[in-house]
Image (cartoon, rainbow, N blue to C red; front, side):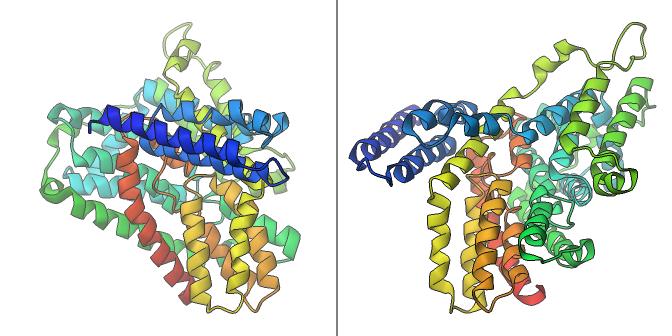
Length: 460
């Protein structure tokens, strides 16, 4: 069966099950529960097999949710106009400026000069650079910054044709950003969200050091595992040298310096938002800083007279579809939440009240890692953590013992572009197929389950 016929069969099966659920479900108070499952199942099926472009699938809630009564118009507008969409937009514009003036190539050259020109060493350099940056900068911002650098390297590799190295270099940016974000409290939004939820609702405080003494070594272990996994899969290709990616050191131009200075200011404001807000009394948001940086690029003069660092025509290269993809993921999460699907899933914990800790952790971590593949990790943590924390209060388990592994696991979504922002950003390059990410990510998801559970049992 060829690919086209397979897609037609998948469309037919998916639509048949979807329509069957809609018509066979009794029209009672539980109807929206099954409608939400039907829409979610259809979206996941279409995402997995790329029946249509994934950005089109992300628009399904727009046309299905309100007629089926599973979302209100206000929910849709909140999802597709979410604040993180503007963080994406601002970050994309900044990344566009880095790419326009070849700043990413300058930095990529620096990385290659440092680690060497073999494919294995370049992969290690990008994985570690992305991971270490993501420990202090949001994983989204890190992926936005590192992707153009990886693309600059691949633009030269492509002269030799497609390779496993091309896939793994892009995945190292996505996975490195997610794994690095596990290391510190500020590394990934779900970390801060969990800390806030526990402090506000349960009086449990998680300080920076308490998180880092668990998250940092766990992050390093996962980065090491990912590197050797990629190293093994590359086979003989790992020893190939890419001398053509190494060039003579070039002098930084004025435009490059202006862009990198502005980007550095944005990164500093992202990294130290909490202390700056506390001590200066100036409240601002990550998305506000990102959009401000984007706006300034259209004001700051270029090296030539009457030119700016960015012009609006440059935005034609912006991956607008990713903004829709994120909105669709948020809409899907809200749909599952308000129609009781998530609550039904978490209700299974009642059966584990008297189970050993390792059994309970296994259930929680598996649900967290594979659940965040189809919904925002922020949405999963915001819904899942309060439920599990309340469950912990009713048992002999500690809240941190159950909630921290869930939050760490939420950063281990490696299979789908919608699983986490770094995956979506890297997928926007157009150089990856969804089955490549899903195949590699599934194995790493299973490894993530084992590592997070083992680490939680030993150190939390």
